[in-house]
Image (cartoon, rainbow over all chains, first blue to last red; front, side, top):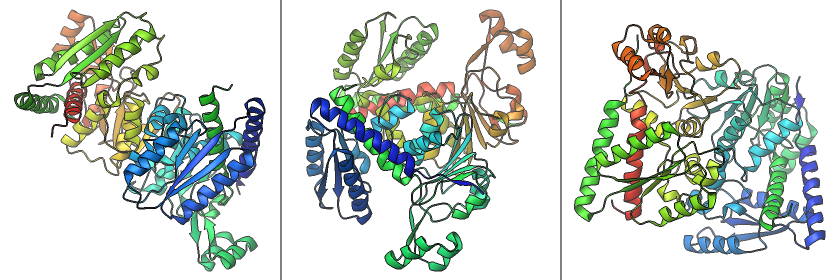
Amino acid sequence: MGIWLEGRTLAGKIRDGVKEQVEHFRGLTNQVPGLVGILVGENPASKVYLGTKERTSQRLGIHSEILKFPGDIEKASLVEEIEKLNKREDVDGILVQLPLPPSFNPFEIIALISPEKDVDGFHPFSLGSLLWNQDGFKACTPLGIIELLKASNIDILGKRVVIIGRSLIVGKPLAAMMTNEHATVTTCHSKTENLPRVASEADILVAAIGRAAYVTPDFVKPGATVVDVGMNQLKDKNKAKEFFGEDEKREKDLQEKGYTLIGDVDPRVIEKAAHLTPVPRGVGPLTVAMLMRNTLEAFRRRKKFQ
Amino acid sequence: MGIWLEGRTLAGKIRDGVKEQVEHFRGLTNQVPGLVGILVGENPASKVYLGTKERTSQRLGIHSEILKFPGDIEKASLVEEIEKLNKREDVDGILVQLPLPPSFNPFEIIALISPEKDVDGFHPFSLGSLLWNQDGFKACTPLGIIELLKASNIDILGKRVVIIGRSLIVGKPLAAMMTNEHATVTTCHSKTENLPRVASEADILVAAIGRAAYVTPDFVKPGATVVDVGMNQLKDKNKAKEFFGEDEKREKDLQEKGYTLIGDVDPRVIEKAAHLTPVPRGVGPLTVAMLMRNTLEAFRRRKKFQ
């Protein structure tokens, strides 16, 4: 039976550290970091994510704004809005909440952000800097995963890391970061042949594919560390019982919301793994904490505060 | 006994295609692509590489210049020179020959090149675009490897690719390109534990580490395709005989130059592999051919020629 690796405690520590620094700089300079989130269209999940980012910013003393635009906004107008934010002295971080409506190429839009304000780390310049292993903003979820492993004293150097999923948000930047951390990294995806066998070579297995409970115990080497980045809705009460056993919290979720959250990893993997991050309260809280840290960092670099 | 995969024929075809296009556009517009190489210091290998690039450019009708600067040039002067080249209308491609003298951070210097002229594909914006799987200049050696495999009808999709080496020049961009080609990609390096075992999982094994004959048959799954990116000098006559058997060309090399070239792969791997690229005349010729193609492409995009 493995250990649940919760990200909550670490995320709380990181937020406390950011809050303290924000207060420190406010005391010294009467300035605070500013973060602007851009929402295009009406994606309900995007609204929830942006809401969390805004509330967390406010709690840490970071000035936060959400700019909302209709899904059919002209590209030229969106370009103009981003250029205005690039110039605004009081804005340190700009993030475009993904996904954008299908009429936009997210690459084109994100490439408009000034790299010095790219706190999400998705700008091509930031991603290229990561391949160069040079300073630059690093994507928040992969960065949170690395921080969680380090804080949990789980070795990365020389270890085999298998990442299932090659998204720009998680898989690709995580592969680069893990390589920079001297892991032997394998990236898998929907076209991978014999995925369970490849996955079971991992000392550290990361699932980021968006398929509920896809990673079953046969994907996992005994004693491996398993990181679950998924966030899926499970609506079936019987399946919930199968995955979680008798669990009051889950039953309450199902009754009140009609679903409970489940990751990309079957929770019964805990019986085989040395560590598994739960869903929720695993890597999720770290993503927002890293965004806060990146925003503070953008502020310090732009203002040249040590 | 496997097949030697020579890059020469494909490289010749690619160069012919570029030459034809250059002539076509010259006839139409009286303009030709322009490529400038920057050499800082006196690295003899760098001079050889730049010389090859210049001669090939000239043969294809591409205007070519090499700017030579002393190894102790001030950073500010180098910055100014690159900015001048960025502005020059007749310059489509700019490359900084690596390695730079240790006083320079290559990242900082290469990031000065205008991404639209980054024909080497090492600018962080180009590398980030590669992670996004969007158009942009792709590093020449990895691009050449992919082209060679495709031209040889070797499947990549779903296959296991193991890359030994995580350099910015080969390993890292190749891992991204292979992932975009739907391979299952593993990147190995000096910190990888049990490297021969990891390597022997590969359907396609790429060696790019700069260690003579490091990859021995025990690294290779029977029937694998092996790509040798190394270029090392072998000076020992007995070892040469051991690796190459009785070989007039090698003996002549050793007598006349004092060395013969050997890759990162023990040539006896040919007995176990389905394919192996020879050194020389394997992937080497493709690197320069790809640089020519990138330069033509830069010219077409900048001039908006279809």
